[in-house]
Length: 211
Figure (tube, rainbow, N blue to C red):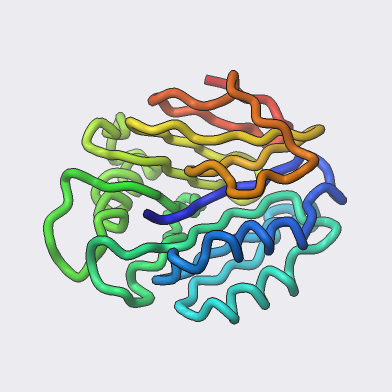
């Protein structure tokens, strides 16, 4: 099963690079069929770096180089391939024309066997059309797992379906994951009241959660 996570804060000097890299190392041994990372910054507005790679060493170097004091959002996905082929095609972090970066852990029950993964098919058939206004509703009833999508560093969609997201809160920010962390960060507390239900929740960038 894949591992995906988002850490976001409404101010700078909050994201601990060493902490993020340790979380990734704990989860990448078995989730090594593709690595996606998005790192967003406060200034200039909507500035970011992304990577989609099959090389774990390259991915760790990317995190080490680009997580800085002015980082305000990190979005990571480590793939464990269960459908489709292992190739750059199926590395998560697909982007919609409207500016959302997408990752998913779990399974899409509408999957049709092909070189494309089930997550990529859900992105193409459901998520992308929804974000550009071609669908009025996002169908998550044939989806299992936790989906994350970030719109630059301004907001994050957390979409749990038949599964809860795990939330670690500190100060003005959150780490949100699809699985409990093996070694939870010392400075974070698990906040059960913020574990998302199976509806579309938006974590706004100022730390306010609306439903």
